[in-house]
Amino acid sequence: MMNAKQTIEAGKAILGIEFGSTRIKAVLIDEQNKPIAQGAYEWENQLVDGLWTYSIDEIWHGLQACYADLCNDVRRQYQCDIRQLASIGISAMMHGYMAFDKDQQILIPFRTWRNTNTGKAAARLSELFNYNIPLRWSISHLYQCMLDGEQHVKDIQYLTTLAGYIHWQLTGQKVLGVGDASGMLPIDPATKDYDATMVQKFNQLLAAEGSPFRLEQILPRVLVAGADAGTLTAEGARRLDSTGTLAAGCPLCPPEGDAGTGMVATNAVKQRTGNVSAGTSSFSMIVLEKPLTKPYEMIDMVTTPDGSLVAMVHCNNCTSDLNAWVNIFKEYQQLLGVPVDMNELFGRLYNHALTGDTDCGGLVSYNYISGEPVTGVQTGHPLFVRSASSKFTLANFMRAHLHAAVGVLKVGNDILFKQEHVQVDRITGHGGLFKTKGVGQRILAAALNSPISVMETAGEGGAWGIALLAAYLVNNQAHQSLPDYLDEHVFAGQAQETIAPTAEEVAGFERYLDNYQQYLSAEKAIETC
Image 1 (cartoon, rainbow, N blue to C red):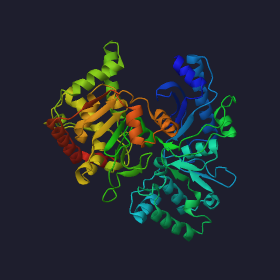
Image 2 (spheres, rainbow, N blue to C red):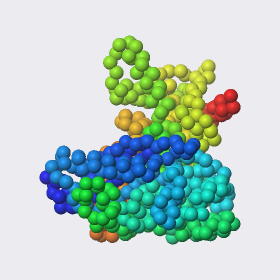
Image 3 (tube, rainbow, N blue to C red):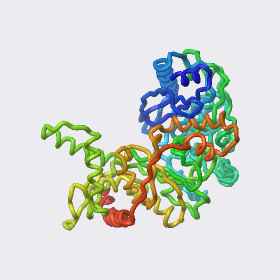
Image 4 (cartoon, rainbow, N blue to C red):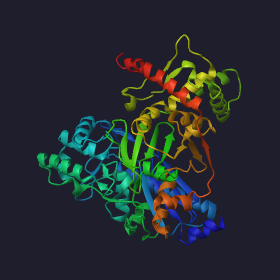
């Protein structure tokens, strides 16, 4: 406690703040990269005129409330105030569309990554660039605005992401970390900057529309981890700390997206490493040694915060349907008058699933609470399928739902491992699926045919990840690469558990997936009913 208090009073603590979709979180770390205080603020996006958004006022209210909650935690624990910081990092959900005019005023309400009105633009750009451009990317939003003839386009002076916007207002610098920038427009891994050929092609579209600007004039400048991204201005300090206690002048690291901070928090920025986040939704991030041979619609190409290419498979559904089935068993226990401990219930059901057949006895579950683009399903309808000859037991039933939680993830990653022959040394899992020790980890290992590790810090999250990037900015005295810095100064000696799949488990999951693919037409047929 005294060491942490001395760190704070000496101005050597480092702050990381991440804007998630439902929560803004702040983490304060010490010189050993250990969290010493935290704050949070709950918020929700709003559907306005058919588009998902957060208001500018709510963004700043949320930031100040989150920081105030952090300061209250510091006072509770250490009886002192934060007056100076060694560095700050800002992170937020990636992609989306924030366009500003010459007076720094937002031209239309912030359009988040969640909006899917950009289908025509994404398809045309994917064809033009010969590169998969997802609906949620900033360039898709910009081009869709052009296609729709939105009048504000001609007045754009600056286009950025949420993290880029907040960083700009705190420092005056129009910059963006390369990982976040890779969700605006594809990055050239050789230059670690926007792909020049794609910029040129988009400029031709702008010229055809008579736009008064070129693309490179309105985008943030791209920076890699460890680069100078500006310092906290006096105005920025007041926007962060409404009490005026925090001093200006500390450096900020390049602002990053939540995918990049997740990679940092799981030590998965080195080539041939990866991580899987599995909760309400799931995604895998595999750091590549070289580009893929061709674009794939179900694989997004982004980068690590230091500019290495990453193949991302994003799935809309993961544990929601599984949790709903567990709640059925909760209701049954309550009906019998048996007290319910949800941790015990999850643990017993999950562990019992491991006693089932490795192919789930022919049982198949589609956990599609919402649509699933990876498998071409537009509208979600959860579905459980079995034949008359299936082995319908509780263990197989639960195992089928656990397989379903990572089944779509396997579909995308099979492209990487089986078609592109991508090599991976280590994959780290984090998220709610891994809360019951060893179970989700073993299921994922079978799905990906790869050892899966879970770290003791896997629950720290993206706010800790961006704090580590802020620490890398000011504490990397030896000028190490980001992977080496994380290995030696953050994760050295950290406990982790690794589970490798058996040949029987891998073969069983393959049989499950064969059934999954066979019955997928039934799931798609529901959409036409």
